[in-house]
Amino acid sequence: MSAEDEENSPELPDLGRDLVVEESKPEVKKPPLYQVLLLNDDYTPMDFVVEVLEMIFGMDRQRATRIMLEVHTKGKARCGVYTYEIAETKVAQVSSYAQQHQHPLLSVMEEV
Ligand code: TYC
Image 1: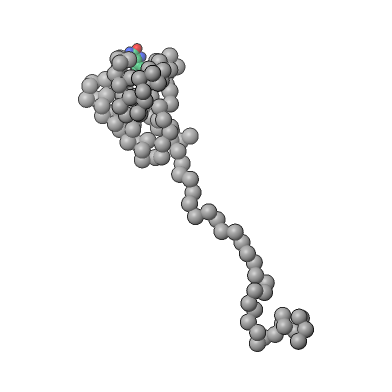
Image 2 (image 1 turned 90 degrees about the vertical axis):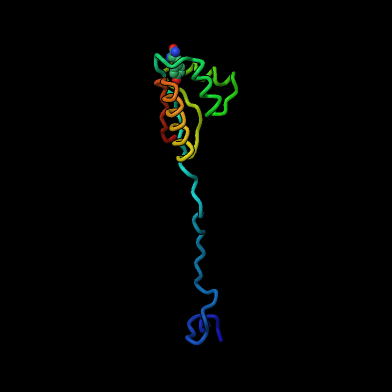
C-alpha cells in the first residue's frame, strides 16, 4: 500500500495524521495589584502616622518617618502594593485605627 492509499484508507485509524498541536493558555493569571496610598491632612499628628506605618504596613521607624514626611510634603505616598483583599484590609485597618483615636487620617487603594 502506498503512503497515499494509507492516508485515504477508510479502514485505518488516523492516528497521528493531520494532528494540530496548540500550546495551551497558562492556567493561572497574575492577580491585579493595588497600591495603598496614605493621604495628608492638617490634623493627624506626625507621630501617629509613623505608628500606623509601622503597625499596619510593617515599616521600620526610619522608613515610616520618610513615608510620613513624603505624605506631609507631597499630599500622598505609596505605603505598599498588595492583592485586592489585602489592600482592602489595610485601608480598613487605617480607617478603624484613626477613628478609634479621633484622627481624620485616610488611605485609599488604586490598581497599579
Ligand atoms: N500634615 C500632618 C501634620 O502636619 C501630618 C500628616 C502626615 C498627616 C501624613 C497625615 O498621612 C499623613 N500634623
